[in-house]
Each structure stands twice: as structure tokens, then as C-alpha cells.
Length: 332
Ligand SMILES: Nc1nc2c(ncn2[C@@H]2O[C@H](COP(=O)(O)OP(=O)(O)OP(=O)(O)O)[C@@H](O)[C@H]2O)c(=O)[nH]1
Image (cartoon, rainbow, N blue to C red; front, side):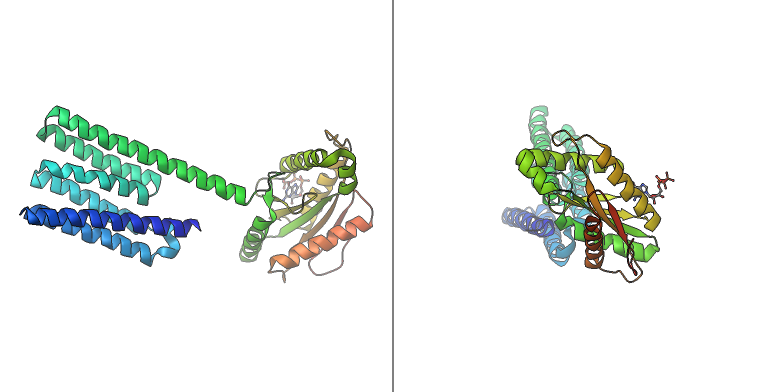
């Protein structure tokens, strides 16, 4: 399930449960003849139903739906105004579900600010109108609710972020995986078209990786992949991105890099890897296929295919070499 859909469901459930709860309060107050509270609860029920309707209408962009902030601000302010004007002590309990709703629906910071605002208003109201012991009990409960709710939401956000990172990260090398490559490359192509800046890519393969694996075992070769990944992260500049295609093959997206630039960086990568002493295998070399986006390249597969052809060409010239294929001509 996507994050957007999950949020749509939880927001809908939150608003609907709150509407049910507040509607039952409205009916109870009607039965006992507390008409002021009945009208207040009816208004709040309508607002929460509006929140549910808004959630449904914005179901495709729940992650950035600013209307929730307005609806919840109206609910919180409505309750505070009612608390002070009606002067009914029991109304303070209504703040508890509202605190939960704030934290469940709004981004954590906004939810916390609104809940603390409600808490402060509640504290001032109770201090002047209720016995101290009762005030302290209610305020402790409200504060515990805010703390536990906020901690839970923080934990959830953290887990969601970790899951997202895992989904786009190669478990062995720690670089981005091939799944994330096409998405980023398409964005970079669109950016290059829009801004007119150059864009280059490199496919990099470790020479004789199978032989090295036979010699040093799976663990040994995986150590090499990890070390080369770290080395590449150290060589490339901010804004460049690195992907693991297969374990012995990597891909680099180099925004704002023309043909002369990609030749420089490819050569630097080739040379520094060949010069380095690697922990398990000692010496290792790589072959690199490079290309720069031509005016006709609007799709990822064209660039990826050309970079791969350039790599094959480099390999034909022996290990430890680089080859460049331009957008519209033959290579060198
Ligand atoms: N994308 C990318 N391009 C690089 C990198 N290193 C060098 N280049 C390209 O190669 C060109 C020449 O780089 P260098 O030889 O390092 O010279 P430089 O004048 O210090 O490079 P910059 O100040 O980074 O422009 C740069 O202008 C870039 O186009 C790199 O890490 N990433």
C-alpha cells in the first residue's frame, strides 16, 4: 500500500470515528436539554464530516493537503471558545479526542503546535474554574496523551523513512539500486531539457569479477564491491548519484557535466581504482562506458543503452579502459 493511500485510510478513519463520537455527545446533550452543548457538538460533527469529505476529494495528494490544518484549527478554536463562553467543566474532556485527531492527521510539528495550544487554553480554563487536584489530573492525562501520541507518530515517520530508504538501496553496496535509477535518470533528463544543461552518465564494471569471486569467495568479492562503492562516493561530487546495477556493475548520473567533464571524471575513477590497494583482492581494475545526452535523447533507455554499448567497446579494448560514445556519432 502506498503512503498516500495509507494516509487517506487513516485520515478517513480518524475523522469518521471522531464524527461518531461527537455526534453521540450531541445526542446525549440533546436528551438532557443542554442545547448549547448540543449545537456545539453538532457543529463539530459537521466539521469532522467535512474533514472526511476533504480527505476523499484530495485522496491522491494526502501528503500535502493544507485543508486539514484549517479544519482542525477551526475544531480546536471552536472548542476553546465554547469552553470559555459556556463555562461547563465537563467540556474539557472533549479536548482528548481532538488532541489525538490533531496528531493523527496533521504533520507532526503542526499537530504538536495545535495540541499544545489547546492544552494551554485548557490549563488556563481549568486553573480558574476547577479544584486544583482535578485540574492536575486532567492536565496530566492530556500531557501524557500528547507525549505518547507524538512519540508514536515520530516512530512511525522514522520507520516509514527507513522502509523507503531500504526500497531504493542495494543491500550489499549501500548505493541506490537499479529500481531507483530510471526514476532519477528520467527526472535528470527532463531537467537537462528544461535548463539546457549537459547531462552525462557512466556505466562501470569491475574487470574479471567472476574470477575474483572464484579466488576470494563471495564474502571477499562483496567486500570489494562495498569498498569500491565507498571509493566512488569519495571521488564524485555532490549532485552526482551512484547506483548498483548488478553487483559488479555500477551506474553514475552526472548532471551539469559535458563530454569533456565526463571524460575527466571517468579517467580519474579508472586511474584511482587501478592505483588503490584493496583489502581482500589487492589490485583491481574497472572498465567504464560513458556518454553525454544528445539533443534527441529524451528517454532513459537510450542513454542507458548507449552507456552500455560504450562499456562493451571499452572492454573490447582490454581491461582497465574507458570509452566514450557521443549522442549522435561513433565513439572514441
Ligand atoms: N559530474 C562530475 N564532473 C566532474 C567531476 N570531477 C570533474 N568533473 C568534470 O571535469 C571537469 C574538470 O574537472 P577538474 O579537472 O577537477 O577541474 P576543476 O576545474 O577543478 O573542476 P570544477 O572546479 O569541479 O569544475 C569539471 O568541470 C567537470 O565537468 C565529478 O566529480 N563529477
